[in-house]
Amino acid sequence: MTEAILLVGGKGTRLRPLTMNTPKPMVPAAGVPFLTHQLARARAAGVEHIVLATSYLAEVFEPYFGDGSDLGLHLEYVTEEEPLGTGGAIRNVASKLHSAPDEPVLIFNGDILTGLDIEALVHTHRTTNADVSLHLTRVEDPRAFGLVPTDDTGRVTAFLEKPQTPEEIVTDQINAGAYVFNRAVIDTIPAGRPVSVERETFPGLLASGAHLQGMVDSTYWLDLGTPQAFVRGSADLVMGRAPSPAVPGRCGDRLVLDTAEVAPDAKLTGGTVIGAGARVEPGARVDGSTVLDGAVIEAGAQVRDSLVGEGARIGARTVLDGAVIGDRARIGADNELRAGARVWCEAEIPAGAIRFSSDQ
Ligand code: GDD
Ligand code: MG
Image (cartoon, rainbow, N blue to C red; front, side, top):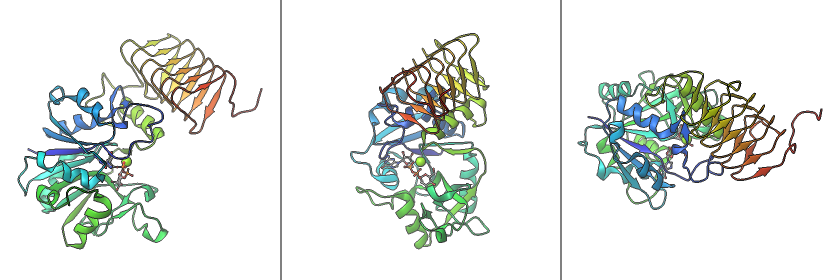
């Protein structure tokens, strides 16, 4: 039976100023903490034991997921005192693993939404006899990722994390943040200090002649590193483009959680989620957006591709497009916020204060 490590620590999250006491893996996507989707997908692929490697705001995970039995999993938690980096975090949980040295252990970055065929990755790992196997995906602009060129058998020839110069951009294949490690390889990572699996472990393994195998899988893939990506991912889950057994209810154009109140003539489209206890007033339109618990969208407001934090209030006729509104912020009536605007938690913007278009 394959077991897995889920990396959910690190220096924090770019959602942090917006969803104050919620680490990114716990911000709801399609109505449940994002991490639920990764856990449920791993379970569906036959994984039963998962160790969460946490550091930042670690104390919120265990009270919510407990021992994992609700998801049919056995979950354990390990909290780093100081962030140990991706490799250090993996090494730090090794004592919790049950696998024998030659058995495969799955490792997942905790901020990825993907339709990866996990069993196919394990299968590739076994059939190629690799030490480590990596899920690779192709992206238009690889600069924010780990570049992973392979030879014509799929064997990894180099690992270039966040390339800085044009000459380093040798491929559009990137590390998609899901690996299979032979247990014995995990034990070779140095303990007790920060290690980057991308900058130290992978290049070191390649230099020592280890077999790293890449599996290019061009299924749905999204790194939820920015609020905009997070909103996109949540909408794709609701619409069924991103497959997850943990989406509550049937997939469709919208997801309205219990106790939310939506006026009959309000329009909800494009994978919009309305959180518990939230209210959408008459004539409001919400498209491709995530409205968290207890938020209010007042009459005639238009919200597109935006994240509205818990308990936030969007005034009448206000327009949001690609905006992120922090928890409990209040945006007065007749404002217009577009193009990546971010409003911090609890901030207040008076009525008619901000416009992007002409004054008519
Ligand atoms: N426990 C723990 N401790 N987890 C960590 C730490 C740490 O010190 N540092 C990072 N993580 C976790 C993050 O929570 C995240 O789930 C994952 O490791 C990757 O870290 P990110 O900070 O999100 O890295 P990235 O997105 O810039 O790059 C990584 O992901 C790309 C794919 O999205 C790299 O693995 C790239 O090579 C890859 O292409
Ligand atoms: Mg990331």
